[in-house]
Image (cartoon, rainbow, N blue to C red; front, side, top):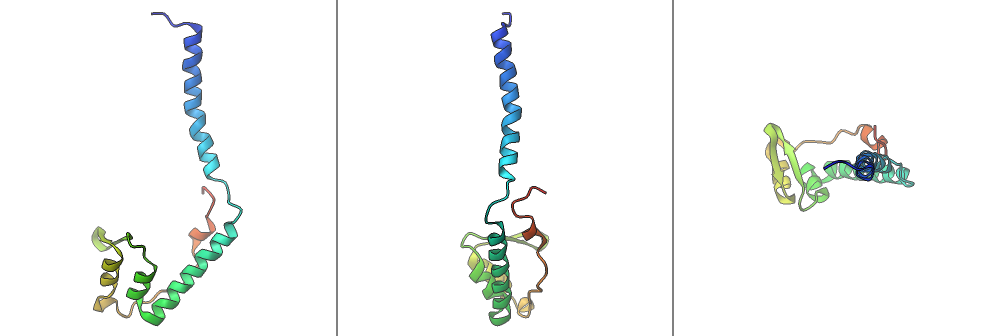
Length: 116
């Protein structure tokens, strides 16, 4: 069966669309939100609250309070700890009782809404 000009047009159009659509999604997903500064402020406040709670109630209680019910964290030797209760038990170990949070500039907060 021989290709007709219409079939070639459809084939080329599909190829073009397959290239353009992902590019459109990429650029749309990289736009800055209007509330970027508000988001940064909210993250900073949550980090400060976590830091404060670790000094007042200990690191186990802070992780328990801030963790989602379905949270999963990765620790030494690629160990996965699943769930809020298990995270608290992990940080409640004797060797971690005196653990503290050291505040530092969060470089990732600066990158919210950007693709770099």
